Image (cartoon, rainbow, N blue to C red; front, top):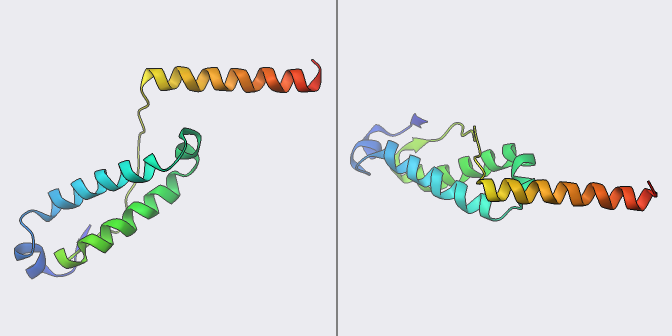
Length: 101
């Protein structure tokens, strides 16, 4: 994050660091909610770019610029992991049945 207008960053918002952090989390949840679980892991870079764009749109009046956002770790609940494993196994069985193995 970079302050591009110190006056706006000081007087335009109470705590720009906290505000940007909250906006990033909210935007990330929103963007992830639009994707399937498989796509989330494949589209990490796209998600990062979309989040940076959303932050910069909102934070322009705060006098700050987000230079980069990175999703480091996506923790998936155990129930979702189990469902993903079941889906992979079903796809393997389907492929094997298709090929006659």
